[in-house]
Image (cartoon, rainbow, N blue to C red):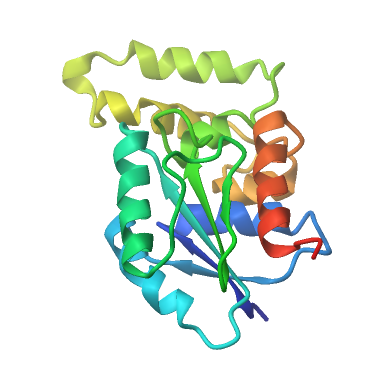
Length: 204
């Protein structure tokens, strides 16, 4: 059962599944109460309610940077200010943690610095020597613009899902972690898990 003292707010189901499968690899990690809010506005709206949750010890806020990390950071920072929480002027590249009651953490997908979203993060988990990944990238790049049903900004998402479709059993991103198709030991994934541990497993 999720521990309602440890809340993680995420934008969607894919975020929830990816985080859950990553956390499963750390047996000491609390069973986070991952709230899939269905979008950035809903995440921002839920911050105040999460802070007021009785007994809550830590809250994580996981959102996509999309095409403007500065704007996304300002949206989160301003919402926190409304709740009396002062966030730094810029996100911490290793994941922001604000000492408050409850403790609050923020991670902008993919890496707290660059534009992107969950799929950019997951792309970093594809093994570097995987022979199919360059082919998946080439396939998406080769689709004529007039025939694409996705925008240029969503190209990384299309590439990741094209690659997932080539697995022995095509599966969602979270399940691909459990199956070993995705490598959770790379630098970006390690940094993300370290942020989660700092937030939800503080040494104090």
